Image 1: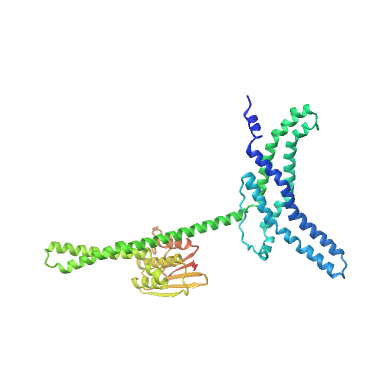
Image 2 (image 1 turned 135 degrees about the vertical axis):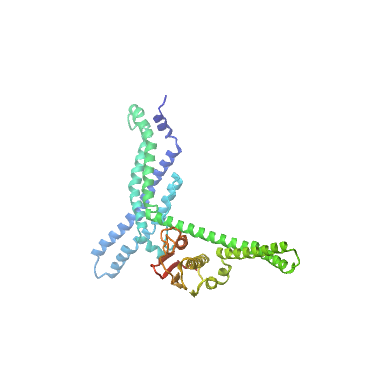
Length: 425
């Protein structure tokens, strides 16, 4: 019976993984030599030779001096510009032969030549150069080790060593070791390539943060779009039917005066209930997303809020150009919720709302002359009861788009809420 370890060692001889690793290591030798020559040997050699020639060049021969300076400075630059092309070849080698995908670092540059020159001094470029320099060592060692092990048997058959000893000991050991050496060399090369050719830890985190930011923006936009759809459906559907019902009941109430008293009271009660339900539905629809915000902008929408407020509100809006719909919606709900809190808890006699655009930020300031004492974790004037979800919700709304929320509310007042939002047009 063959042991499990021996079976695994024998199966590695015809394993596709072993042959792919062997091909990867052998192809890495010429590619590593070429990468080293183009990214290190050629630039360093040219610059070194030109530098020494410049030192010993005749001082009065300006043409020779200019040519040497040009050679020392300009020639290495195109060689270094081949780094990304060589890196692409190396990534393709890993992908085709090993099935390993090494993602490129995020590109922040411009593909035009004069912008590409700026990338030569980046850490990303020099990490790639470091891999191409190390590829000479890893390529020679890996390919030489694997090739030597696979060549033992042909050399034995050619009579280089004593056949009796070689065929019974050396050749079988070399054949069994060759796949594992190839796998080990490929694994080591992959680890080095991931560290030097792939994105660094900070770059991975940056990409992750950017991805999460895009996902969050998409979710916020989708939520806002869904809220608009619900508002339209209620406005065009249920609200219109309630309007029709209230009108019919009103006409019946006005015209059916000769009906019995119980029936007339039932019609009056139904008309009152329909009118109240219509008013509540309108307020609910307005709270979802006011249609005037889309049609006429933030100034008109906030004017409607302040006009309905139960206390005098001074409104100032200085927004020369409109922001994105999501930002306008957040600003609208910030003002709406803040004025609701003032009416419920502040005991204020007046309030002031200021909305202005400062550079690329939309600043919303809501102030009142109430009793103060508001915090994010408690209702105004009653600390610790845990009912301050309104202000906390405003802070969360602002944070959802990378905005800021500031609350200043000393005991005795006044209270000022300042929200700044990125105004993306």
